[in-house]
Length: 275
Length: 214
Image (cartoon, chains in turn blue, yellow):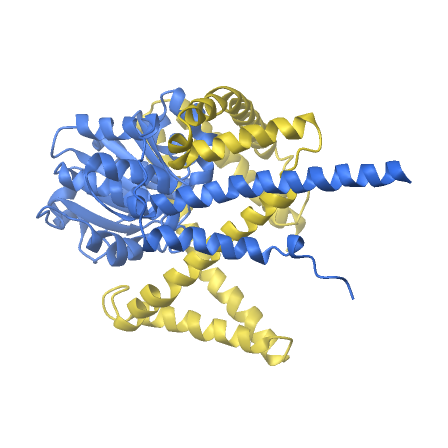
């Protein structure tokens, strides 16, 4: 039977990770949240829009990606409501309209906004991501006749005169960044803000630098920065400490793994030398 | 069905539609725009049908496994029970508003989905310990830049040392962006090549195994 080696038992790391996540959630540290350039750009873009502007919020939000994409969408939508924008929600994944109705909208301050007048949830368009986004952008009235609650679009004041994406002043997409750049920005040249997965942030910097994106919220960290700017305490700021400690743990684990690697390789070389 | 209808007709349809969509993108004609918007609506309808097809296929496969009493068959039965409970309760009354549907969605589905996603954190952390090792100079460079970027992306980085975000941001803005630009341009060229091959009928992967690559 092989001898038990605690250094090769990764359950220690699992336990440390659980503590690193749960401890700051239970006892917040309050670490400062520096605001990144991409988040500041997104905030400034919305701040510059006049109140009452029509904004489309398209998303691939679902239960699985909620921890990373839910807080960015929540922070952005909170800002839109605070600025009294007219918001049209669309889902490119079947779960999105339900999670918005059950989890996102009830948690934010809507500043007396009226459904159908100031905001509307149009439901889901099949064909994620490109087919749905292209259909929404170019032929909205052909693929949707009623909103998520079954009310005809023609009866909704917010949808009066809205036929394509060209009728919007800003579009926000939560998910990836390539497909909205292809389907929203390139054909219509409308300012586009994206909320993306934390791990995908570095991948989309070229789109930001090329001016195709007017702002980018990167995962939970970006949500924390945005909440700080808007003055709203949501899941981003609440999870910011946990994010910091877990990232620190990963960095420590990498360094520790390398020290162990150096120790074993050097030790092995020494042993071979003595032979 | 003859090979002509099984393989040639879909190829012709795909090629014509793809060519039309490209032409429409470059020509600003109202007639072309209307037809293109109709084609895009068809895409949505076909995608919606695919969802229904998924339900039928899943049911057929699971029923077969349950009938044959294959290994773990109770899980397949449970999958069908939950799927039809969700579909049924979601369709009763106003869409997605039935209490059973909402209870299952809010109290089971969201948390199970989030759990599946969160498990990634454990894999990533142990993978970082096992795989992220300075075996040579190239790996050491990746390791150092990786640690700086990790600490830059976490708010605590600046608290530990104000230089961390500066160095990490340099890695993101210069080497990362140069590499990513190359990758994006490469993907673009690849997609263009694939599109041309599809229009010309050389690419047959979308025919679901009825032709293969020419």
